[in-house]
Image (cartoon, rainbow, N blue to C red; front, side, top):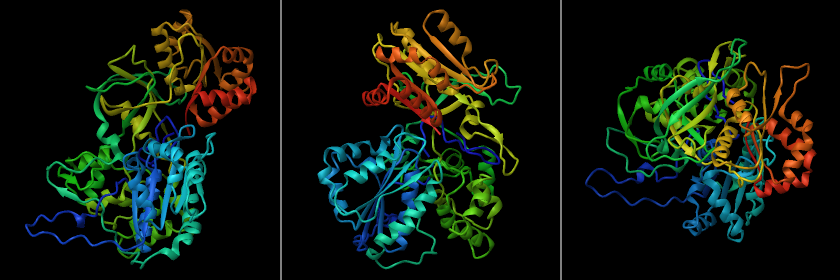
Amino acid sequence: MDKITPITLAATGCTLLVTSVCVYKLFFSPSSSPSPSSTPSEPEKEDTRPLLNIYFGSQTGTAEGLCRVIEREGKERGFNAQVIDLEDWDEDSHQEFIDKSKKAVCNVFLMATYGEGEPTDNAAQFIKLLKNEGSDFEFPHAVFGLGNTQYEFYNAMGKLVDKKMGGEKVVEYGEGDDDKNLEEDFEAWKDGKFWEGIGGMAGEQQQSDAKPENANKVIWGDSPSSATPNPSTKFYFDAKPAKITVNRELLIDTSNGANSTKHIEVTLPAGVKYNTADNAGILPHNPAAIVKSLIDHLGLDGTATFTTTTAIFPTPTTVFTALTKYTDLLSPPRRSDLKLLAKYAPPGLSKDLLLRLSSKEGKSEYESKVLLPHLGLHSLLVSKCPDVKLTFEDLLNVSPRLQPRYYTISSSSTVHPRSFHMTVAVTKGTNSSTSEKYTGLCSGHLSGVKECDAFIRESSFKLPSDTKPIIMIGPGTGYAPMRALLQERVKRGAEGPNVLFFGCRKSNEDWLYKDEMKELIDSKSLELYTAFSREGPTKVYVQNVMEKEASRVKQLVKDGAWVYVCGATRMGADVVKTLKGIVGEKKVKEMQEKGELIQELWA
C-alpha cells in the first residue's frame, strides 16, 4: 500500500509486509582514516566507554533505523554504541562476533520478521547459526521484535532470538506491531525498559543538544570510492537500468474512478536472469521538482560530483542524482528523526516545534501535523522549518534512504527469457487531511517512464511436479504470480489441474487479463472460479467462493495440490481460515511445514 503525501506518495511496495531509513554500516570513525599529510598520524586511542553492540535484522530498513536511534542516544549516555549489520555474521566471522559480544555490557538485537515467519535476507545466516549452535550464544543481551499482527507468524524472529539466546537477559523482550504503531511500541520499550535496565552501566554522559558528528563524510570530486558497498543498501549496487518496452492499461473501465493498473514489460539488462514468479525490485525516483526545490532551498549545486567515506550508494555521483534516487524526501520522519533535526535548528520557533513534535506530550500534534498530512523531509525543511539549514553532508546523514518497491513478476522465465512482466496498480487519491491529490511514488514513476532501475530478488513461489494440481488464490494484482505460474505450467505441458480463484470489484471494470484467462479456459489449461465483490446484493470474496466449492478444494488437496495465495494480509488470513475449515487445521499445518502452502502478502 502506498503512503500518502501532498505532492506525491512514497509507496511501500507490493509484496511482503514490511515496514522504512538511515542506512550506514559499521565503519571506523573518519578520524581514524589515514591523514592526507605526509606526517604519520597518531595511533588511535582505545575507546574505554562501555561497549553497546546493536545488531539488526531488517528487510526494508525500519529495524536499522531504530538501531540508529539507540546508537545516538547510547553515545549521549556515555556508551561506545555501535550498529552492526547481521549480514556480516556468518560462519567465517562467527567466533569473532561471539568474542565481540562477550566484551559488551549489552548486545541489542532488533529483529524484523519477513514473509511468513522467515528471517530477513540479511539475518538468514545468523538465524541458521543460532538454531544450530545456540550454546555458543552466551552473552548479555536484549531483544526487540518488529512485526505485524496481520501475519500468522507475528514476530517469529524476535521470539526465536529471545528464546534461543543464552547468557544474561539484561532487558525483557519487547515487540512492536506495525499494524498499529510500531514506533510507539519501540519508544515505550526503549525508554521504559531498555535504558532503565542498562542505565547504571553507562559512562560519562555527553551534551545531548550538540549536533552529532557525521558518520558518513562527503568528499567532493569524481574520485572513485574504495569503500566496500554497504550490505544494507546492496540493492542500489545491484540495480541496473532497464528499458520498458510495453506499458498498457489493464482495466476495462476507469470512468467510475477506479485507479489505473498497468501491464509493464521490461527488457532484462545484460547478465540478469530470473526464475518464474521471482520479485522485481524497482528503485523509485523522487520527482525532479521536489529535488530542485530542496537544492535551491539549501543553496546546493545539483551538478556537483562527490563520493562518500562509506558506500551507502554508488559513487561518484551528483548531488541531484543522490537526492533523486537514494534519499527519502517524502515519507513522514519518525519522532526520533525530528528530535535529531532539532539539533540543527537555531533557538526559536522551528527548534521548539521540532522538540515538541518529538516529545511524548506532542504525540497527538505529531499525528495531526506530520503523519496525517504526510509531511516529508522536503516539506519540513522548505516550508515548516526553513531556518533549519543543513549542509549536503548533514542531509545525507540525517535523511532516510529511499527503499526499493517489490513487484512479484507476472511472467514465466521459460516463456519470456529476455524480459519480465509486472502488474502495477497506480496508486492515486486525495489526502483526507490536506485535500491535496497524491500519486504513488514508485507506481506513478513506472507509469510514465521508458526506463527503470531494476534488480531481481528470489520469491517463495515454486512449482510442484507437473502431475500435481495447483490451487491459486489471487484477487486483483495478486493474480500476478499466478499468471507466471500458469504460463510456466502450460509451457511445460503440466498434467495436473490449474485451479484459480480470482476476485475483483466488477467483471466489466477491473477484471485483469480477462481475455488471457478465457483463452486458457478454452484450451482447458485453467479451471476458473470468480468473485465480484460489487456486483450483487452482498459482497462476495474469494474465500466465500472457496467455501462454496469446498468439495472441489478438498479433493484437490487430497490429490496433493499445492496452494498459492497472493494479495492483502487480511485476505490471506481469511483464505487460510477458510482452507482450515475445508481440509482441517492439521492438514493446513502439514502443508505449511512441507512448503505446499505458499503465501506472499502485503498490508
